[in-house]
Length: 227
Image 1 (cartoon, rainbow, N blue to C red):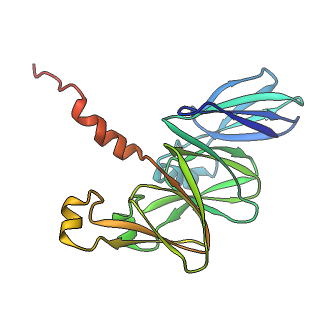
Image 2: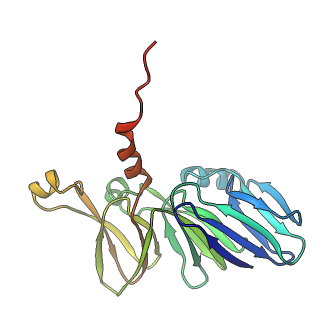
Image 3: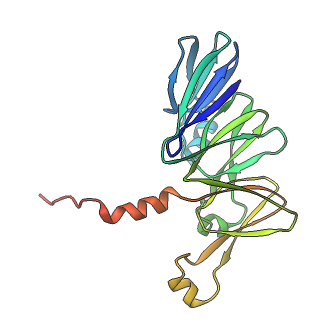
């Protein structure tokens, strides 16, 4: 499989598959495909898999696309303004924000990851449940806005705005820290908590979150008139 990512704020992922290769995606992610690709929709993992995907805010069903001929093309689109990130899970499993999985090779396993600390779950901006990508092969992740990737050394800590964490290697520890100083809390604009990420491992940080975007747009939405 080869791939190319087109576009900027609403990118498109285009793949060229060899005969027999299978690509898995969330419901509604496919934008177009050649007639030499077959599609099958499955509820993988039975009721347990359905429940896990519901907790991750994903569709209960996955779409499987199999190429019948070399050179078969298929494309997947981003569902909101942002970035598509290709990642290889062969060497290290990855922990991702909910609803971030776009598609992957069939050898990649999408599982659930729970925050180990309740404080992080409630105040870290990502909630109790995150996604865990493991297995082997390439996966493609949706992120909000632009993305910056950094590698943290062992014991190195970075403080991040809540909701700005896209993904991190499973060797990275995620926690929260209360903002110090009442003036900072009331007027700093960063809220009561910051997310902390402790190395070693690679992290991905996004410049925008859908929650922040919705908050900025909300004051401009028309108010429905009462009948």
